[in-house]
Length: 301
Image (spheres, rainbow, N blue to C red):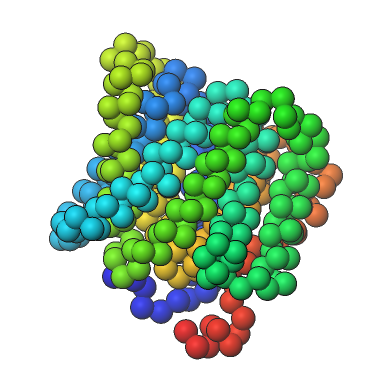
């Protein structure tokens, strides 16, 4: 069932955890595709994560829906939120710089906002939301450093693949509202299992996984990608769709970058650009503008 009452502090904490889980996925993918081809990596990712969630569902004494209509929605969600965008990003990260990939993929909230406001007319074109979009993107550029943008255009197919993945994620956030009332683990597990069903035959046909000799690092990255960045992340994601809404949930894309920079500074000793502090302030302001509802709306809920 959907959460009965929304506590904004809890939801923002979950948004931060989700951003951390998905922020780590870029590193997992980068290590994974070194010895595991993209389709095979993502097929294994969706299968492992789907089975983990299915086991948790069974442990809780619950069962996945059995009606065909719900499973059709799971299939559509799998194309928009896992099978297609996961594969596009994995393929792109074979050649694309990490900084540029992060910037391009952080456009998800913009596409979600534009789709919901203009196409679906379900989001109001308020100054607060527009400020959130602009501030968030400005912060991303400041944190990564403007030099990262110099690579734009040199690897056009990979760049377009990441942008296409961002559009998929934005569409998935909007379509995910069709699962309101379901336990968040149901669409998470159902869509992942559908994604695995689509990708496993493609992996067998195109990449012949039985011939692979993946490294230990790639296997460990696959497990981290499957359990942390997929099973756990999807459970949180479908809850937030119900509580923060589509645009608010996709705002976690802005948080991935400062989290990634922080991990690099603390654990890897990576340098921080002089614009990082200003960028982080912009990101936080943008996320708050897109996720925290006005007082009147919160009181009504």
